[in-house]
Image 1 (tube, one colour):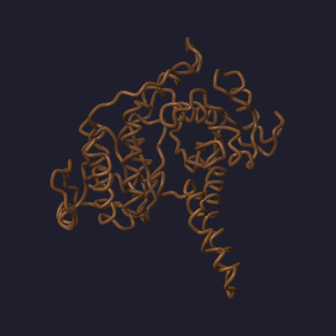
Image 2 (tube, helix red, strand yellow):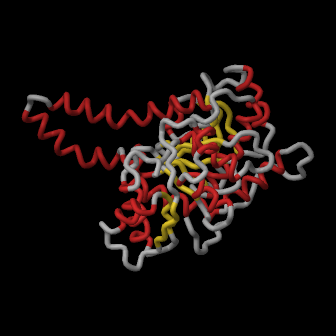
Image 3 (cartoon, one colour):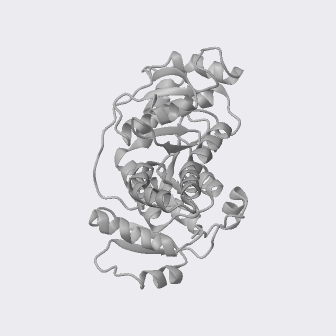
Length: 345
């Protein structure tokens, strides 16, 4: 119920996800039941694995995350996350208040042992495939240990979901040299170079799109700036093309011919394609989407949640974090398997 267009787009996206996968899982729609059922009545839902759980309160984008969770215990966010905590759902996804989803993920699901701070990873396109950027805006002030943990969690995600066998990890910095950057970044470098992660050293902003690494590690202040800049690129290119074509028939025709291939080539920079970003470091699967999510974005957010649930990512992160703790008996690595089964999302 927390998205900008809830529950219209949420219902439509849920239906699309089930149709596309031929009911590969069940979707539980949590929120004001009457409003949800009114939307369901607008669609053909016969035979779809849909159910509704009533929650009469809504945490809005303007609410203070932690305070809202305490004051609105019957919100769709709190009730839905609790269903996941109780094992009645295998994953949770929301296009609502990002801070509230993160707080609920941490407070209700709890942190994985060894994780100091849960983090949000974001997907960046590159010449060599998808790259995971962590932290994407959750923790703006980090210590070296936090960056080290982000690298572990990001690497496990890249293995489990992206299927990278041995993902390359890079530390985002102002230069490639080992002694570049702040004291925190330099200390994080020391932790990473002695780990068994496939750490290749410092990377610069230009290396992200080049595909030099599969996991880019930074604090949330830098990460969110990179993410928001990247999201602005498609719109900027479209604007420049319109300016180029304005008032010239030949240029207009050229742009029209190039529109389809350009749109397809920029698809990987469209948030709708990925749907949502994962909260890493909590005991469960929590996916956060844009507040403005379209039905397509909601559909892909649900598919992402199902994919992460099947990978049993939390268990693999816990194993890797345990190995990294003082006294750990194993290197920071884990074998990723995928166990398929029925999920309730």
